[in-house]
Image (cartoon, rainbow, N blue to C red; front, side, top):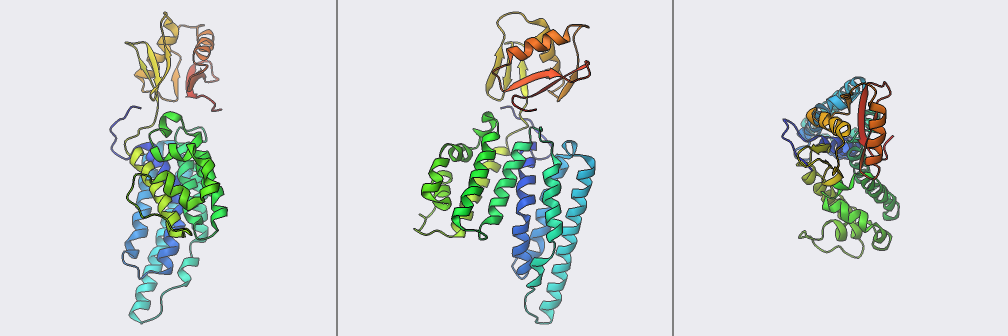
Length: 328
């Protein structure tokens, strides 16, 4: 897996945070808007919204402009509601009125819109969509804690595991917690969600043993540990793209060799060289002499039949695309 310096956060991390933060923001708002006297409450929501805006900034080129604009407007509305709650709380505090219990009911539609828009933000075929879905599943699991019993939470963890299993193995292996999660999911029903997370995700951390009957707090700690594993790995992970090494005539995807050429294949190698020179965009113009594209792509697809990526024509007869194998 190659890395690259960027001015912002890595795109896979931005995709993951967009899913996690958009789907778990309701949990923060319910806590703060029902207990605004909590130390730091006034600034926590603006900070969370700033983090979401940072994700949108990093992903701007990946998101439909109309959806991007709607996301920013929805965040503006949530921030305005928060400012109203803070203002009302300060007035109530000055008048020695009780805490504002009604505040938790506000913003329900805006939060629903936020999740719906975030779900539409990235194309299903984007390399970042898997990280977004993982973040959304984990954020939803956090929200569900305290709302349902442990038996119902098993389905939430199974969904997190299912989404993790759709990630390319070269990326999933960078997150030890995800590898253990997918490998040991059969133990979930026997152990229960809280003990399962403690055993699988925090084996090397200095944590107190869980009691026989665990609490929502224990389960939340397990999910926080998984989130920490993911974000730590993604801070150094860049958007995974193929790499063509012309010197060794080897095509890589992450740490996996897709093809090592031992015989001359000038047309195939010309295509791979063009992709490498342009930084592996989703599409390039046909670099071959007229009439050679169709047969060369057919040969390339056969060459890459068992690799994690494949190449194809763009439908116009003038360009070439690449994608992960198994994607439409």
